[in-house]
Length: 284
Image 1 (cartoon, one colour):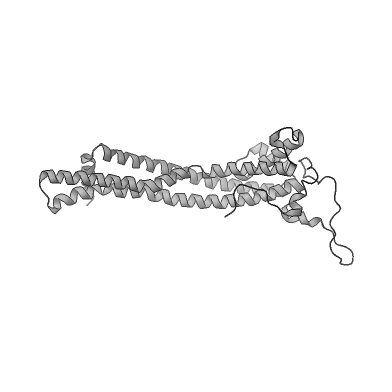
Image 2 (tube, one colour):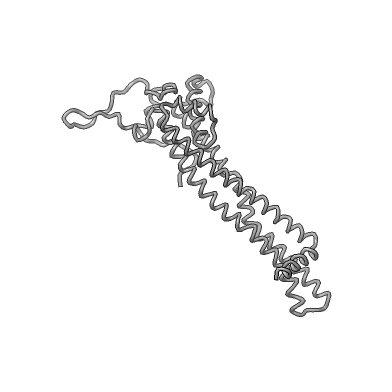
């Protein structure tokens, strides 16, 4: 049986013309490119997930933002979470050093921080989705390339049979069956690409959702010096069980260690309103 299959494939390749061979080459290139991307992307996802978990553990256990910034400078931004954090800390330092000297720096400190985080999230989203167009293109076009090769092979097989004048079943089944190899080849290229596209898309959706939530906490922490759930804890209880009284306002909000203080009116905004900075994409 193996010998007959080898002879069938060898016979098809020997009888194929330039167009059929071009279709085979295109499918082979699609398969190599998609499998290369699948393997590289799988390694990248596993590595980024491990580095992200380590960075989040270090971030929330760090004594101050200065320690976090020092750690990032020493090890570099090796994942999406550390990259967004580095951009946010650099943006706040830039704002307090240069103020609003340029049009791109206009606005309050919280607005400038929001723009910096949003830009960092956009960069990480584009990086996570890079290459997915290749998998989508291979998964959608490979079956049709294989079908084209099959149709072209059947056409030439029928023309050759008609010219020979022998139309018996044994003369028709062989060449036509050999041409169907192209359809199987196209499906073999497309199916892994489609499955990998769906798996990578879901992984990106989960990662970007966590990154979006972290960016929200990071904004509140850099702007107010406390995590979001701690921002409302400044209210004090009146003696005798009366209603809570908000803490007395100050001219400038206390900034985290290692980060310059945020101007009044900007730092308190996230804690008072709970407004989430625009990030360019939502968690799904």
